[in-house]
Image (cartoon, rainbow, N blue to C red; front, side, top):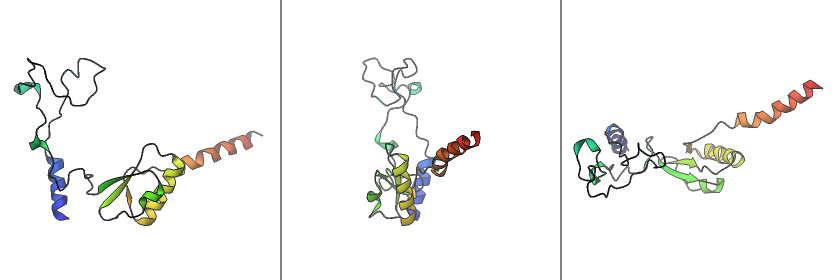
Length: 143
């Protein structure tokens, strides 16, 4: 475990360049995703120093920690409370899917807390539950 923590610290300290798509600043419709420059006269493809570097195998993180969360846990995406069964709380952490609604999200969060799992994108759902109750009180006061 100490070796993985050390490798994660090294990975975060490592100055990896921002691999920018060529011409990204020129057109708003271009997405900020890497595309290999293929032009014949392209300065970035020809690796001129000031034109940005190309992704190479040497920039990758060590295989032992590749894909790990910076906290040291392996991320597991979950969409239902049933998917929490069989997860290891020492090495795995839960990330709730973005398409999951508040009701099911609350169920997943409480179940993960019971199992001792860490939720990486936990939300405070107590506030969302109180909002309808407050609006009913305001209606009663007006009467």
